[in-house]
Length: 269
Image 1: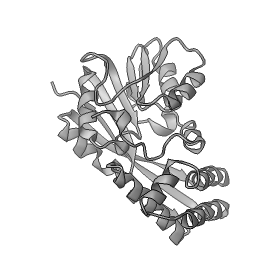
Image 2: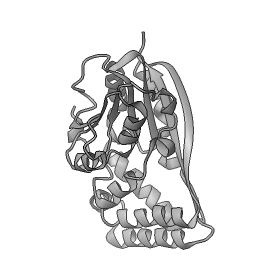
Image 3: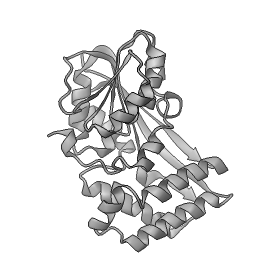
């Protein structure tokens, strides 16, 4: 099994990477923040464009920080975002077969990664392997089936059906958030602490950003091709979903909640 042979449901279109670049420790990894102390060595699995990775580096300096991706496209953006920082390394890496020796890091972090894998338990086992005995593995994933919004719109209901259908067709689990606790236990982790947090989009600016991003992504990303090829929607339906996102974003009553599961755990002693 190799991570670069799996299908990343979202792909790396501009609309996808644009949404990832707003992520920071504060808004996407608060559950791991207490463990990010100066001198901490961190592996960021599935680092994407590197915004969380660089934020981590600023918190743990002079600690060593490494961000990995199974494919090169996001790493170009990550290196540009790091702007030549000597304390951050970005490299190709496979979460199923990490290059690092046992016990290499104090913190092994993955944000929105396990939901895209066909074997998240195997990935967690490998993350635990490279974690020091007194370190932590910290993961966070959205739970699509638990997402809720207002006002109701059957086209947005269809959006959720399409996305979950595409993800399941790739052998992935879009409702990962609720499963993190069980996956960590199955991987043999110790001292497992499960929590939850949300993203909420309700201000005009937030609605324009979230709705505009999905209006674009449903028409111009890897999801588009997979949705049509998998028989989940045709082009006309996808265009209707895109319009629904635009209309939701323009509605003063618009509200959208993205729930996340989180786990912080340790290697078994």
